[in-house]
Image 1 (cartoon, rainbow, N blue to C red):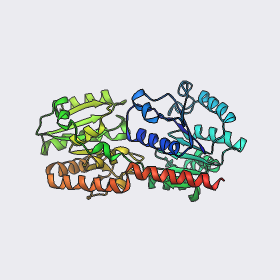
Image 2 (image 1 turned 30 degrees about the horizontal axis):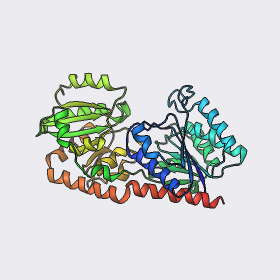
Image 3 (image 1 turned 60 degrees about the vertical axis):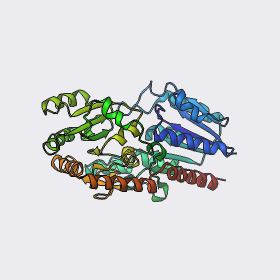
Image 4 (image 1 turned 180 degrees about the horizontal axis):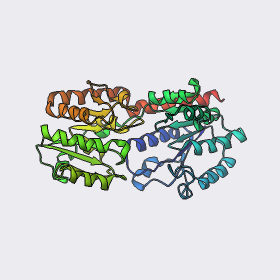
Length: 391
């Protein structure tokens, strides 16, 4: 019997692909006779918690995880949570510890506790977000030479990144290639196999039944390229006036975007969905997804769009080019290029055959490369190999 500890700075709020992955990962190890501990800021809601119920799965709730914030930007590193975990680690011994959705600072603190006690040789840090490289040459050298990730890599058996671009950035940070493993995120395709309530999306938002729907899913912040998207939509409407933009998400730009809607005379074409738990239903009702980000890591919504059989218009940043093959599964444009963004959207809205073909191609690509089954198998193979090497 082995003991696994998953430390997640993550809230189980809706039954999403990530929730499904963690539940299946935990249950796979539990069903094979291993003990699984999951440390989280707060316990999952009952509708999600039921999927984790197993005699060998235990949750450790760190209720004060975010109450004492040291990193004002990310609000992820928390001194009290680290102290709680330190106390637990002094008592319990684990065969593998995996840190998901944690800041490098917090991960380093936990890893260092294990290093001091020499209890756990199997530490895995998961770098889900984009690794930023400073443009200034001097700051770039300092950042790469003394980066938190580089120091963390000395304590961890592996650093997992979710896209090839992330691997390139980690290499630039001076992390040894043998320490890096790429495992793409995946989606549960079964959630997208039934178009339940698709017509209800038109009725819910009072969108005319003959209109095309463009959907954006993400946080409403400047780096998502929403200012350029609104400018592009104004141009799109000149060619395809029967078009709606459905925004799924909330964020700091909400009021600004509402004002921009009025200033650009987009009233009646912009619809606000807020945060949603029915992303498959929303995507299956749409004609295409748009992701005009300035910067991006590996956006899960790209593969969710493929699961829903709709093409993607995205900027050529982050992990988008690894998912969306240009002119095959969708169209890629340069960031902050309003004209090209508008042209790409119009191209797909006007050509039903091309749009559906690209959506089908993206679905096939997701089935082959980005399913939750392949993601689960890759993580289990990695964890098992690390535990085996430590024997």
